[in-house]
Amino acid sequence: MKSLFLFLFILSIFSAASFTQTKHKNGQNISKKLFGKLNNGKEVYLYSLQNKLGAELKVTNFGATVVSLTMPDKNGNYKDIVLGYDNLKSYENGTSYFGAIVGRYANRISKGKIKINGKLYQLSVNEGENQLHGGKIGFNKMLWTAKTFVSKDGPSIELTLLSPDGDQGYPGKVTLNVTYTLTNNNELKISYEGTTDKTTVLNPSHHSYFNLTGNFSNTILDHQLKINANEFTPIDKEFIPTGKIESIVNTPLDFRKLTAIGAHINDNFEQLKFAHGYDFNWVLNNYNKKVREVADVYEPTTGRYMQVFTDQPGLQFYSGNFLNGTEIGKNGIHYNFRTGFCLEAQHYPDSPNEPQWPSVILKPGQIYRQTTIYKFSTK
Ligand code: GLA
Image (cartoon, rainbow, N blue to C red; front, side, top):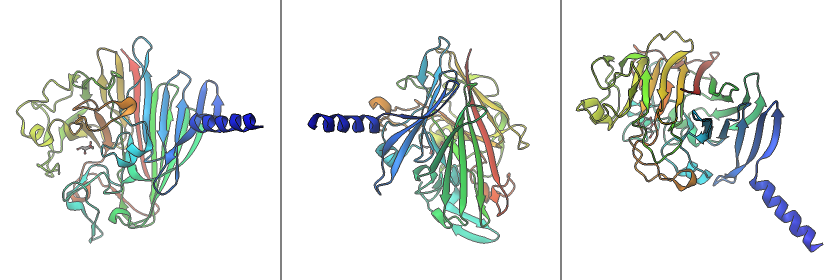
C-alpha cells in the first residue's frame, strides 16, 4: 500500500512537471504544462507547439510571451533563437519585455499624455516622465487566457486579454486577441484583433529578441539586416520623436541593402549617441494596410535567414543596447550588451501626439487588426 502511494505521489510530480499532450495532427503537436503561480495564486501555463517540419514554439499566457522558438541552421541543426527566461518569476520581475506582446501602446508616449476628442488623459509613466510599452503594468505583465488548436497553416495558440476601462489611464475597455501560429512553412505568424467600448488608442507589438546564431554569448553585430525604408522618425535624448520624418540616405541608418548591424553602429552620429546604438522607428515603404515584406536578416555563420512581413507603417529596430549582463536567461545565461535584436512592427512612436501621422485611434464598433510574420529559412 505504502509503495502504491509513493508511486502515485512520484507520478503526480512527474506529470505536473512534464508537458501533457493535448492535440496531435499529422506531425503537429500541441501540449501544455504548468509554468508556475503568480503572487496572487493564479496558475500560469507554458504551451508547446510543434509543426510538421520539427520546429517548436513555446508560449506562456503571462504577457502572451514567446519563451522559445527553435529553427534549423543550414545543416539542419535546431537551436532556440529567441532570448527569454526559464521561469515565471523572472518574467514577473523582468524589465526587458523578452518575447512579450507590448501595449496598449508599444514604444513611447511623451509625458504619458494623450488627447482624445479634446479630453486630456494622463497615462501611467514608467521611463522618466514618459510612457514606454503601455505603462507600469503593460500587457506584458498581464495574465491572458489561452486556447490552442491546429489551424490550416499549423498549430496555433489564441490569447485573449481584457484591459479594463481606465487601465494605465487609457479610456475604454479593450479586448485584444493575439494568435500565434507556427506554420508548416517555418513562419511565426502573429494576428491581432482588438475592440473597445469607448474611443481610445491601440498599438500593440511583439517584442521578441532574436539571435540567429542560437548561441546567446554571441553578439548580433555580424547579423546582416535589410529594412525596406528610406526614412525614419528622429528622436530627442529621451527617445521621444521630434515629429519630423528624415531620410536615412547617407546615414548609419541606411539598411536598404543587407548590411552588418555592427558596420556603422559606433559611427559619430548624434541619433546613435542618443540611443546608444540602434533604437529607432523606420518609416516603412509602401504602407497601404496590406501585408508586405519589410525587412530581412541573414546570419552568415549558421545560414539562418529571417524575413519580416507586416501591414504596419513602422518598424522599431532595437539592437539590445540596454542589455548589460544583469538579466539571467534560459540555462543561466547572462544576456550581455547587444546579444539580441528586436524588429517590432507598429505605428510610429508617440503618434497620439503627432496627428499628421497614421492614426492609432480605435472607436467602438471598429476592429483593430495587425498581421506580422517572421519567416525562417536558410541560405
Ligand atoms: C524597445 C525600445 C527600447 C527598449 C526596449 C526594451 O525596443 O525602443 O528603447 O526600451 O524596448 O528594453
